[in-house]
Length: 370
Image (cartoon, rainbow, N blue to C red; front, side):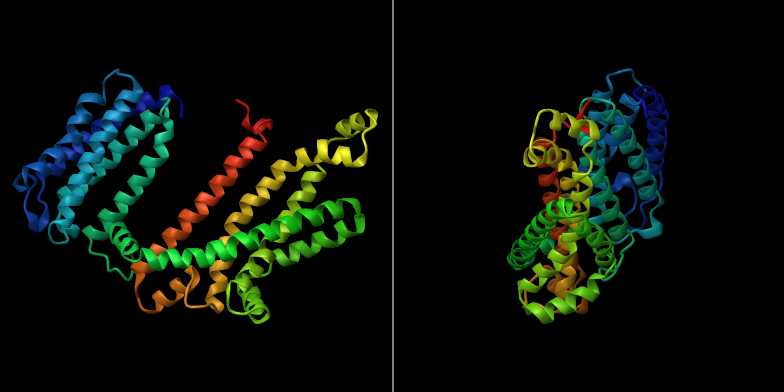
C-alpha cells in the first residue's frame, strides 16, 4: 500500500478504534465489574489508547510521529488488559466490554503499523506484529481459560523455559551443536563437491539428478530408523540423517548454479585465454553463489527438522526430539512448547546468519540493487 493510501485509510481506522474502545469502557467486564471499578493504574493505562486515537488519528502530523505515539499507547493499553486478565477469574463470554476493547486495540495497532511501514522506521513493524500475535494468543488463552494440555499461554511457556533452562540447554547442545551443525556442514560440502565433479562428467549428472529427486521424496520416518540401526543411538545417527537430507538439495542447486553462466560470458573468458580452472573460479562459481546460498538456507531448516524427528526413533536421554516425545507422553505441554521455542529461535538465527553472509558475499547480485 502506498503512503497516500495508508494515510487515507488511517483516520477511519482510528475512528473505529476510538468507538470500540469507548464502547468497551461502557460495557461490563463479567465477574470483575466495570472498567471504572479497576485500580487507577489499570484505568489510566487503558484510557491511553482511545486518547491517542482521538488525538493523533485524524491529524496531518508526520506518519512516523503518529505511528510511534499510537504504538506506544496501544502497548500500554495492552498491558492493562493483561493485568486485568491475570488478576481475576477467567472472563470468557461474560465480558463483552473487554473483547470490544481488545478489538479496538487491534484496529489501533493496525493503524500504528500502517503509519510506521510508510516511514523510515518500517523495520520496527515485524517486531510490533510479533508482539501483537503474542498478545492475542495470551488474551484468548487466559481470557477463555483454555486448558494447558491444548494450548498454554506465552507467559506460561516463558516461565517453564526459565525454570528448565539447564535441561533445555543440554538438549540444544545435543541436537543442534552435535548433530545439526556437523551433518549440515558435511552434507552441504559433499553435495557441492559432487556437483563440481558431475559438472565435468555428464553421465554422473544424468544419473544423480533422478536419484536426488528420489531421495528427496523419501520420508524422514523411513530414513531415521535405518540410520539409528547403522550408527547407533547417539548423535552420529542424527547427523547421518541430516547428511542425507541436505546432500541432494545442495547437489541440485549447485549444478543449476554452475550452468547459470551465460554463453556470452564463457566466450569472453575464452577470448581472454582463460583456462577451465580460471573460468570456474572467476566466472562459474561466483555465478553459482546465489544458488549455493539458497541451498544452504534451505538445508538450515531441513537439518534441524531431520535431527529432531530422528531423535524420536532412539537417542540418549537428552535432545530436543527426545524432550518433545517424552513430555508429550506426560502431558507436559508447557515444556514441549518451550522446546519448540528453542528450536524455532535456533533455526531462525541460523537462517538469519546465512542470509547476512549471503548478502555480504553476493552484494553484486541484481536482487540487492535498489
